[in-house]
Image (cartoon, rainbow, N blue to C red):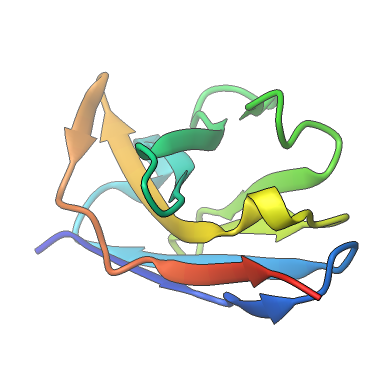
Length: 118
C-alpha cells in the first residue's frame, strides 16, 4: 500500500525556517519523481518543488526559488523540503507526492500545516 506521511510543519514567524519530511512506502522510491505541493485556504493546490529521480537539478516554483530546497534520501525513501526566509504567503498545508513514468502514484497523504505569522 502506497503511503505518504508528512511531518515537520508548525507555526513560525516571518523570516524563520522549517524542514518538512515525507516518509514514503509501497512503491519504488528511487525511480520515482518526488514533489512537494501546497494548498492555501481558498486556493488550488500548487506545485512547489520537484526532484526527479534521473536529474540532479530540482525544479522550483518562482515563488519559492532561492528560499526552499528539496532533497531526497533514496535509502530512507524520504523526501525533504527545507524552507528558509518564510513569508506569510507560504502559509498552507504541504503535501508530498510521487510520480512514476509520468503518472501519479497513490493518493494524497494528510499533509502538514505550515503557518507563517507574527
